Image (cartoon, rainbow, N blue to C red; front, side, top):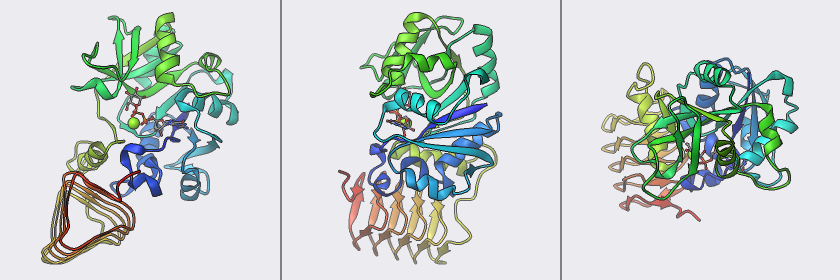
Length: 336
Ligand code: GDD
Ligand code: MG
């Protein structure tokens, strides 16, 4: 099975972290986000992944120079300008020379980490004779997602991207699709086309789109809150055995307190400093007496003596938070 991974967005909701590193190359625990995604796909029989790249493409090529990621063959294609989700699928399908006779292929949003059983999705897809099948997850607040209404068999009657409340359903597009090659013929070339706003609504109207309701581990790690949550889930053992957060190559002062956090290689936490519910990047420094609570400190950033970084603050790569400064829910530097 081949998969197209959509990884060409600007990651605006994670700025300033994404000003220097594209979203799917940001670390989740100690590995880039994309490796968690590719690992999940490879467990379910995906052996070739086409990366639909745009913004920040060099970072992916540099990380996987031999064209392999988590044991899977990678094929990199780069849009010269963003084509949106469907435009990117069409471009990647053609540029990677994907063979129509190979049957359905997978498409996944590159920021979705999930334990979806692709085999189960494929069975429904085949039995239904679907042209495309979407994975659905039930959430409390559907407003920031694609909302999907199905009949009892799973045929999609309506697909509405980020509708104003009240949403017609709590089942949302979880961002993994199976597509028959005929879907490519539905996507115009040479312009931006959205899977969610054009292609799937048209297929729902035509009755050729199906959905698998499958509540399993799932997170879209593309916001400050969920980027942090994806890492805490691994620490808390919500996906297999609990993972260790503190790298053996991090330096923690004996008088530092680190709780339920990721501290990456080369990072240092000083005397009397506290890190809780947070992620501290490679080579970052948390100086004596500083506090980092429920926040992300980027690679090689410094939180000065006695500073307080709290409430989902994002500190960008290489940034120095001055001693004593208090930041809550902030982005430094303030994102453009
Ligand atoms: N190659 C390429 N080109 N990739 C793109 C482009 C583009 O022009 N635009 C976005 N992407 C990639 C992003 O990098 C990301 O991995 C994926 O497409 C989805 O974009 P997001 O920006 O993360 O979308 P979202 O989270 O607001 O909404 C999407 O995901 C939700 C589930 O997590 C939609 O698919 C929703 O319907 C869905 O519910
Ligand atoms: Mg997303």
